[in-house]
Length: 134
Image (cartoon, rainbow, N blue to C red; front, side):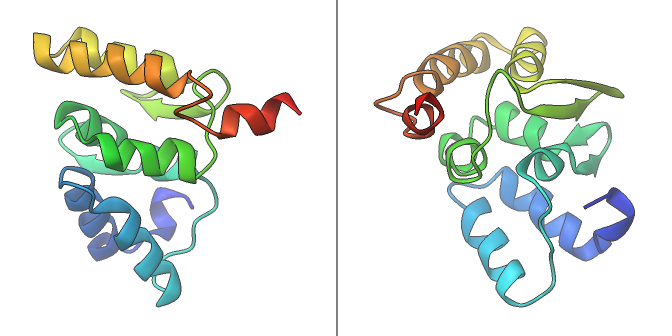
């Protein structure tokens, strides 16, 4: 899924959903079912440009959307330490991208990212970690 392959109205819907409580997973699923969106990888979804320098990932982090992040990381099988996303013209590891966003945010967002990175690295919270150990 390159930016050119995503219809602008679909991209707009995804960007909007990224900042809304629990909205991203359901929207992605319904768009895929309706053949309006083809998902190559979770990394590409998180890297999708939303305008004004924002991406789906930055919108989720800056609006502290825990369930949308869970969908993107856990349900889409991403790795904090291996998955690569685009942010500010650079490609970086997902955890580094989240920390870079937090560094420019308010204290509440920094605390959210710190707690979330800890949770996502916990195998009780993130069952994908158990699968990767086998």
